[in-house]
Image (tube, rainbow over the protein chains, first blue to last red):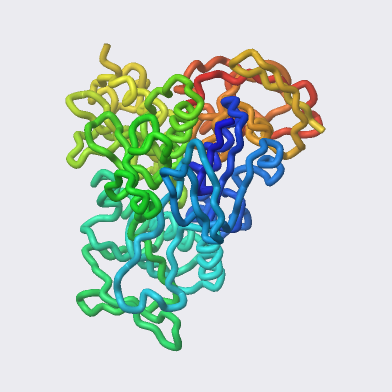
Amino acid sequence: MTRVLVVGAGHAGATLAGLLRQAGHRGPVELFGDEVDLPYHRPPLSKKFAEGDLEQWLRPAEFYREQDITVRLGEHVVGIDRDGRRVRTGSGDFHSYDHLVLATGAEPRALPVPGAELSGVVSLRTLSDARILRKCVEERRALVIVGGGYIGLEVAAVARSCGVAVTVVEREERVLGRVASARLSEILAAHHREQGTHILNGAEVTRIDGADGRVRAVVLEDGTQIPCEAVLIGVGAVPRDRLAVDAGLVCAQGIVVDEHARTSDPRILAIGDVTRRPLGTGALVRLESIPSATEQAKQAVATITGAAPVAAEVPWFWSDQFDLKLKIAGLVPPTPHTVVRGDPAAGRFALFHHHGGTITAVESANSPAEFMAGKKFIASRTRIDPARLADSSVPLRDAVVH
Amino acid sequence: MPKVTYELPDGASHALDVPSGQSVMDGSVRNNLPGIVAECGGSCSCATCHVFVEEGASCFDEPTDEERDLLEYAEGVRPNSRLSCQLILTEDCQGVRVTVPDTNG
């Protein structure tokens, strides 16, 4: 019977294990995780870390027993023997496979400045990171967030809502510079400032000062000192592709896979944040999102079980900031033509980005219908009439050009 | 304990006990039934847990505006469409039957 080993017990790996059983795979399934906790939902780490329900397991413990999935937690896979079709763990054991799935995810990018090792300086990727951050917020420690990405801003929103003094230091001229349209950046930055978040753009951290091993201030290139008692480093994540690189698989800052989740070794697949994948645009993209991980888990299951390939999905993700429930679909082009529907000042709007009338991306806040419609428009390459789309009194369906 | 019958796209039918306080989505995920993907983990964000409520609809709260908006543009939507993450079971829920569409992504 076909033996499947999964390295990485995050959303991608755990989802894949469950989907294999749904698809009727009867052979052994083993899931290896570096962490000691059962697979858990990661969105609450930045969105709900100040609340009590931080630990949300993806599946209860009995699930793995009932589904006959062997979960090996706290067990590090340190090497792949491709010829022998087996992996080696830190304790020196070997485990053989017929199919190996790498779902090792990504880890926080380090900030290479003096003082980054001080106590009170944290990054956010794991449950234990989130618990540290929760303590910081509970103790109302003044917080500096280095990096104005989605995770940094989500944490800023939660911390501000708890009454913590928050400063966001962003190197670029706008927050979310790499991932959002300029218009959305502007709207979100304004919303944060209204709620009392201090945002510094075009600012670079040169060092972090401390006393008695604890952080006391973040120091910027221009000499500005920002006193604080906690620092979150949120400057992006790097794929954990070391195992694949060492095994000689084709990697390019991420494991290169095709639309069937296959790596350059037919016996090895890769899914989730660690991969660089095709999206039909010609370029290989590394998407860090749950829908992308789920989609690739489905691809991998189809490949392993020999089922028909799964249809391509529109990339999307969500973010919560204060009272704004953001849902974003498609890839935002660098210089979009944008139709604004709704009212950004009222916190309910959708930015539809189009190319010659064909919708390519939608960024929405508190507008689920616009998001769902936009996602469908992107998938079906629907053409819209910009003027009608901008008019909220015109139903979305009537903005479509037939 | 509340009982929920799930009619799956392949014609299979599963009658499961789902504890009060849990959702119709939880019952499906917990038992690894196919069709309810539940990407967002039950936060009414993604519409990948769409079901048709065939019986027992009255034991659930009315959909919120947010759920209605998500459903309006979901694939294959019908008058009895709901997001199963919003269908929270109580002891009163006894003959709940839902059909899981094969369009949940």
